[in-house]
Length: 278
Image 1: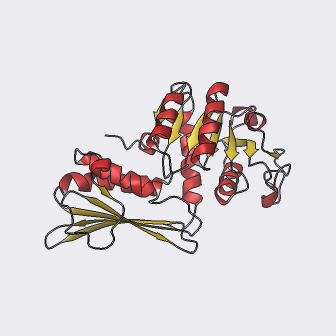
Image 2: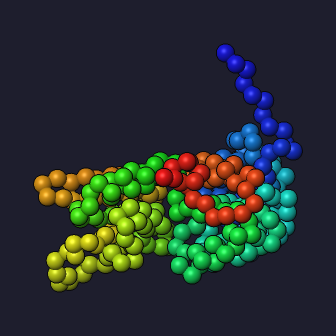
Image 3: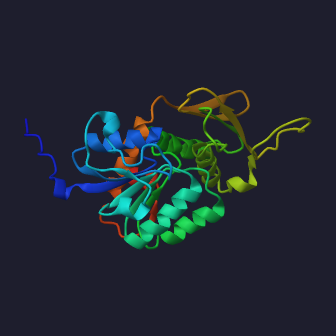
């Protein structure tokens, strides 16, 4: 039996800041960082007016981190190697611009970006390395790989994507559902923009043969369920991923932080992080 490796020293740990520190995802990220032996919390950011401002970022865990929650972005990023951001598109873009100036890497789990906003992130990634993914969960990214394989083999089958999330989610379809559609369309040599159907109401006529349909469910505290239906003649294939906790998103985010170490620039996704490209 080999001896366990000693924990990394404080000076050798990657220093991580968290945006939206008092939110559900922010707290999950802070807890995961606290439990790691190679990362340390370096900053905690929240919106002006948040009741948590000035409090220790780990007070909810019953411990002290020495990091106070702040709405001063530059102060919160001081000394950080990377920022993890699960907020809103406008906020993330503002954070990304400052990170690019400061040389702070970014792990972005924010969803709902427009194509123009994605182009802005692409431009900023020429100055600092980023991981951008609509879902940081390891399992869901393996699911995306399975969808890629299925889509290549099931050409001509009808495709429907059904997603369900909690009642507080503000964008629809979810970023993960859209990513699923993009992966499927690309695997079949097409573009999702040319095939997506987001609404059906009234007399819709027959289903367009090449369409990819989306259906959205919102309710309760559902963390995230996604099912892709491939419907052929006489048989169906369903590929489903269900999240029961945000812990998987946090662990995937920390893997992304580690992946970025030593990378000066570039825009990456979780396929890169997990070695699923190709």
